[in-house]
Length: 141
Image 1: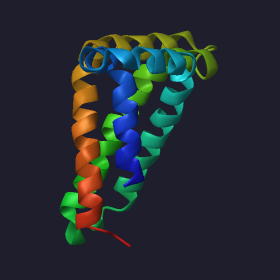
Image 2 (image 1 turned 30 degrees about the vertical axis):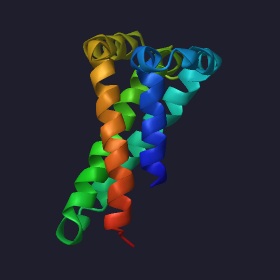
Image 3 (image 1 turned 180 degrees about the vertical axis):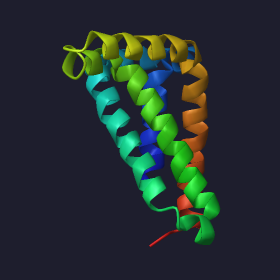
Image 4 (image 1 turned 45 degrees about the vertical axis):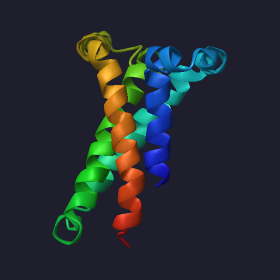
């Protein structure tokens, strides 16, 4: 359930224009978060990657809880993608500053994904809500 809640919060940060069109007074809150956006993105990128690894390591859940496994994988893919988009500047600065080829590849990937950030944010909200609902329906020990 926590993964779903955090995915919803990350998605809200990723689609500020959608939020501002619905609630104009949210601009102040989003401006307060903006300086930390890179770090938030970095954390969620790695958290999403860890979740993808966890899903792959627990392929046996496909036989006992396939919908939950797919939900877990989808939520973490969206989390990693949104985290990468929000934290790409910081990721380039910290991890890729010495490798120009990797830096260029990361920037190229970001340019491909950037136009889809709004749609991915909406998908993140939907998947996050589904993760919360699914956590009540299927719990895996």
